Length: 112
Image (cartoon, rainbow, N blue to C red; front, side, top):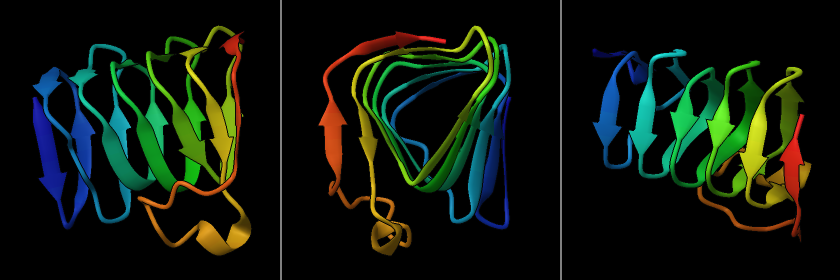
């Protein structure tokens, strides 16, 4: 089940494509996105098979799995979250753009 209200979204099931939200997008433990995610803030407890493009904040829960790069200004990860891709930090000035690709990338795999 996918719910979109006032430009915000919550995903409980499987989505193929690129969901975008105006303010925030959350993905439950049972949610899986096959595609990139674009939103100012992303709260992930499920799986994303693609890049996360967050203009501001990314919050990864204990069961979060990312199979792609994470673009963020601020990131919070719980113990158990997994990222298989690059962490790409954005400068504070880039926080208003969900598609800016500035910053530095770290070519490493993380399992937190």
